[in-house]
Image 1 (cartoon, rainbow, N blue to C red):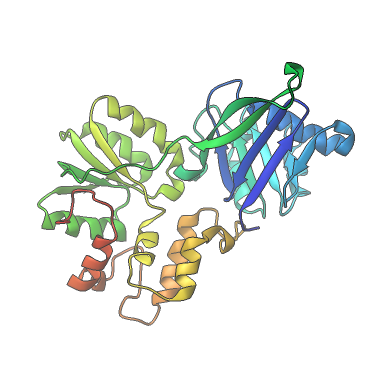
Image 2: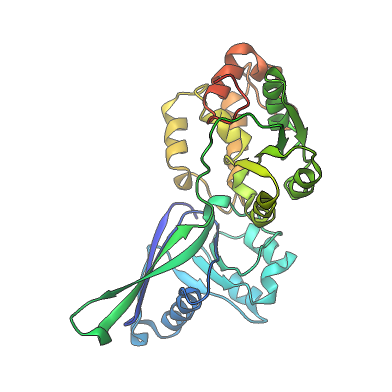
Length: 325
């Protein structure tokens, strides 16, 4: 399954609209905004169809799973959008992670807390917001319209110089940013994994930090890192992945690559790539195979640190305070 889907669920009292573009979408936020209503409406429509009085518009089938036989239910579902409430204990199990990773479905999870076992994107964590709009002059017919918003919006960057840069991994991305930071005489450290970023930032003697991580799978860590902003100045730079940065930097201007970057959901098969980070890594490897820029995630090809290549990638970055821009 691939592509972007628009979902509208309408009852006589509520209308909910969602855009679903990845295999993992998380709905969080305040109570009484329509999360439970959405699941109940989809479940009623699945069981009763038009007789439920509910209208569901979506180009993909929408299913709700739950209960002790969830695995049997899921085994019968393909190429659909599967909705799950995290009050179902299985959502936090490795069995569910394995089933989701190897299925052809998209998943929308209503989650009250973080789900660290699932690699969901920072960009796909949504809250729901309601507006009441009277359809006639009679208040009894007022309908609640619900739409989604990204809980973690785009970060503004002021270009101020950080005291320290913390990079998620210890591989190619870290090697690149370490060299970039060295040119500006800024300390750069590796957290050794996304789950270590909180402790690395907390224990750092620096007060002004720049955290660089792969946004494609950093969703579960966001509440913890955000909580540190009460004590330190922390800016977050969360591109999809380092490979995504390289692909969009200007080193590759072919039409196919640019089209893929504009509409990645149309190219990424969720059954093959549980995280978009995996897809961009594969694309960069294939694009550079047998060239002087041949890419390996485990160790950065020195060609990317040559003046032209380094500057081309650096110039595509926002004003993070780690370059001369």
